[in-house]
Amino acid sequence: MMVLPVDARGRMSAVKRQIQSIAALGIDVDVLEVRGRRRLKYVESLPRLVRQAAAATLVHAHYGLCGLFARTNVRKPLVVSFMGSDLLGVATAEGTTTLGSRVVVKLDLLLARHADAVIVKSPEMATTVAPVRAHVIPNGVDLTTFRQIPRVEARRELGWDRRRRVLFPGCPDEARKGFPLASEIAAEASTLLGEPVDLVPLCRVDAELVPLYINACDAVLMTSFWEGSPNVVKEAMACDAPIVSVAVGDVMELLDGVSGCTVVASRDPSELANAVAAAATRGKSGGRAAIVEKGLDLESTARRVAAVYDGVVAGMGRC
Image 1 (tube, rainbow, N blue to C red):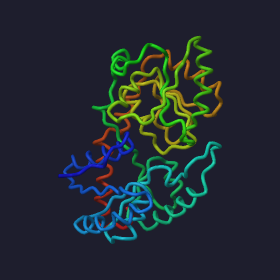
Image 2 (image 1 turned 180 degrees about the vertical axis):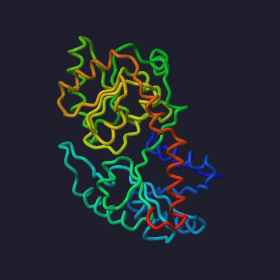
Image 3 (image 1 turned 135 degrees about the vertical axis):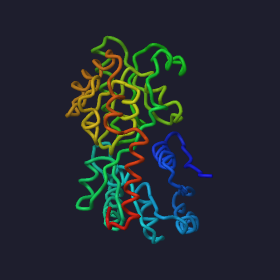
Image 4 (image 1 turned 90 degrees about the vertical axis):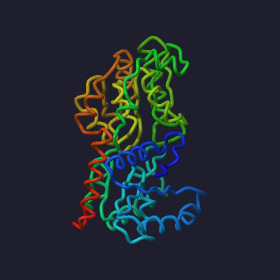
C-alpha cells in the first residue's frame, strides 16, 4: 500500500496530489518522506532511501535538498522538481534574499547539472536554472476538491458573518508573502468601499477547509515578493474566485485573459486597493475555464510528468 506524505496544515498538499495523480496513471510509486529531527532527518532517512531506491527504476525528488540527498547516495536516474525557494531564495521583509538561501540556490544550481531531468514550476525558474534544460510543469489542480461553492454556504460552514473579506494566501510572519502591503491595501479598500474589509490569512488552515476559505471570501489578494507557480492562485481560479495579484511568478500567464482577475505590475497600494475594491463587488471570475484550457488539471500535469519519466528511462540523455 502506498503511504502518502503527512499533510500537516496543507504544506504537502500539492506533492501529495501529484503522487496520487501519477499513481492513477498506473505508475508504481514508493514514497519516502524525509521526516524527523531537523538537523538529523536526512541521516536518519538514509537507510530507507538506499533500500527503497534499490527497487526503483528512477528517483523523483521534490525540492532541492531532497535531490542533493538522493544524488549523493544512490546511483539511479534522478528527476528533481524544484519547488520555488530552492531556486529563487528565501525573501526578507525588504524583498531581498537571505544569505543562507543564496548558498542553497548555488548548491541547487550545481545539482541541476547532475540530475537526469529537471522540473520547475514557472518560466522564471527555468531561466534561473539555465543553461540546464528544464521542463516547466506547474502543480495541477484537483478540480473535484476546488470548485465553486455559493459564498453564503461557504460562510455558513465556517461560521462567518456577512462582512467583506479578502483572502491573504499565507502567514503574516512569512516575509516573502508581503503581509504589510496586503494590510495597507485592505485598509484603503475599506475606505473606497465605505465598509470594513477584513484580511483573512490562509495560515495553519486544515487542507480540507481551504476550498471553503476561498469561496467564502470576496476576493483573493497575492502580494508576494516571489513565487514559483502559486498553487493557491490556481485553486482560486478553479473556484472562479476573483483574484488580484502583483506580477509575481507565473501569475501573469495564469491570469492572462481571465475575466474578473487583475494583475497589477507595480506594488503601489492605491492601485492594488482599487483593484481589490472592484474585485470584492464583482462576484465570480472565469478562472475555472482557464485552468481546463491551460491543461492545469491533475491528470494533464501528471501525464506531462510521466512523459519526463519516459524520456529518462528511455536513456535519451538529459531529458
